[in-house]
Image (cartoon, rainbow, N blue to C red; front, side):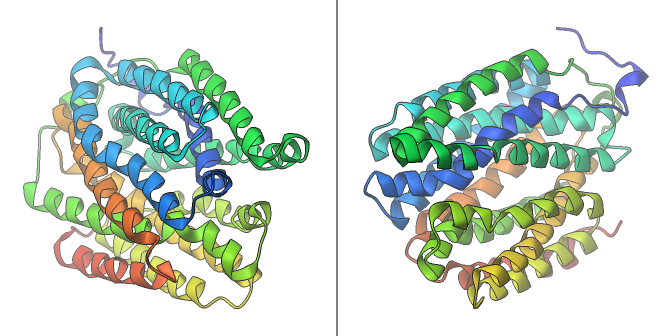
Length: 370
């Protein structure tokens, strides 16, 4: 497999496959908790399901980075796409919680291969010199999430005809087909900038890794429980709870554009998250909760994009995918721990403030200014 170094690859990354791959994850994020309720389970099983996904990421993502560095970004994304289609197929055939856990674990394996290869590919084609390309990657993921949002009205309509569980399974099968279709949109192979960057800063990289752990822990403590919280606190129907999130989707188109590879972006992003979490815990109405959710998503978008921008600057190009693999694996280790215990904590948002504030302090101590 050859690598291209054409200058034409330095400003226009091909992200159409990544958009398609992102859509099934929004379907799972929005609608899986209520499917688990349909199977007769509760918040604890919801947390374990998302922890299963994160556990796969913890185990597989560093190895996925090695594969992407050795065999190429395109092959890694292709294998991930096949596994993502398989995970959605398994979810469409699920009849018990064990099937859901297995599908989520397989989905985590798939995302490991796809995401590490995608962010390394963006580094290859210009991200090292133009951090805005990482913003384009995040925006592509947001576009996929919005596209996947069509599953919300689709499942709602179908549920009136066949029940929620059957509607969820049928929609999962549709996303399996969409994931397979993405294989025809994979980017070309490239290592344009990777061969030119030879410097690794172990101290700063270590700080980034610890920051990713804290970010994952904070998100895991509340992320899986947001929709169940809305359902319980305000008696919202599953679909009304999902609709409360829609304004926050705007943040994922705006936040990445505000991110910078600097400690100030990380510190400010994590503080915004902490403030928003307190507001979400004490929101008196779903409308105020939805408005504050916009702020929370903005902080997460700035924080996560800024950290990703920093990785390529502190890892030698030949190890870019492995660097991202370790970074994302540690991030999801934090998420897995948080998600696994999230069902036992109420309200979940206040517990998540602690690692968010710790992350802000850490970033000011050991990350570099821009």
